[in-house]
Image (cartoon, rainbow, N blue to C red; front, side, top):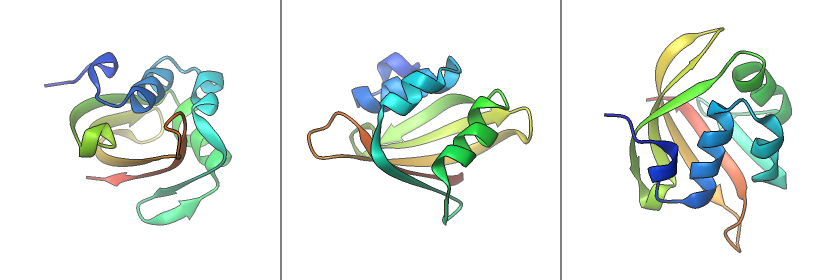
Length: 109
């Protein structure tokens, strides 16, 4: 069963998933802190390069299957034109004040 982005518990994470699925890079970037970081399969990556390659230049899309930790952890079927579809885990760290994501970690689930 897929969880619609608007039904996710954390509004910032919900907006980020919506931005990914709408291919709206500007909206995505507005949800991150200026110094946001990320990792993929346990290795820190250049955030801008990674989101271009894995999401916005390759038609990335998330179908969320489950959430936990108040909506800060997701399991999603993620697909893009480069890798096809894979089951992925996502963990989001919300910056103090709650309005933006300071870090996200993803990898195969």
